[in-house]
Amino acid sequence: MKAEEMFRSYAAKKQEVDLLKFRITNFRGIDADEVIKSMCLAKPEGEKVQEGETSDRTASVALNYRKTADRLEDEMFDGLLEQYRRKKAEIEFFHYCVSRLSGKLPEVITDMVVEGMDWQELSEKYGVSHTMIGKYRRKALKEMDVFYEIREKNDLEVMLS
Image 1 (cartoon, helix red, strand yellow):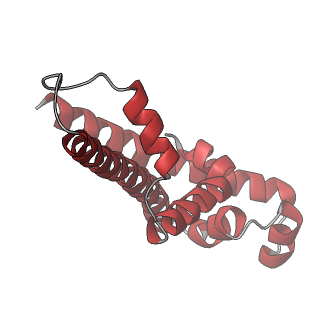
Image 2 (cartoon, one colour; image 1 turned 30 degrees about the horizontal axis):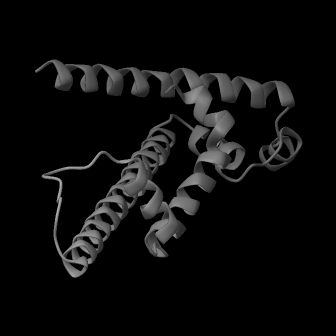
């Protein structure tokens, strides 16, 4: 992901992280109907029971239900947690990059992207023209793209080693 994409989608990404955090914090498991659907679509494992008492069959179904429910809940929770970690790390990296910008760019970009100020508000706050705000933005993107390229290179080196 490049810096410009984060500039455009920061608010949405922040909202996604907040929603994922809420879902993880309030995780209640999955609906019984979902487990039953999963069991109906799954292929049977193990030996087929040809004869047996009803209680054995009932116990077997109950155990299979519980195993399936536990597996699905674990997969769902792990998926939510992985999404949260990935998106949170992306936002933290963005904040790190902003904090490393030169001059007054960290303040301007924080106001622009994180606080969501429009160019008129930024012009008034910093006493500069819209053109200058545009120059600040371009300079920040150029500086931040260096960080993103370094990260991408490091990630590639890790994967290849």
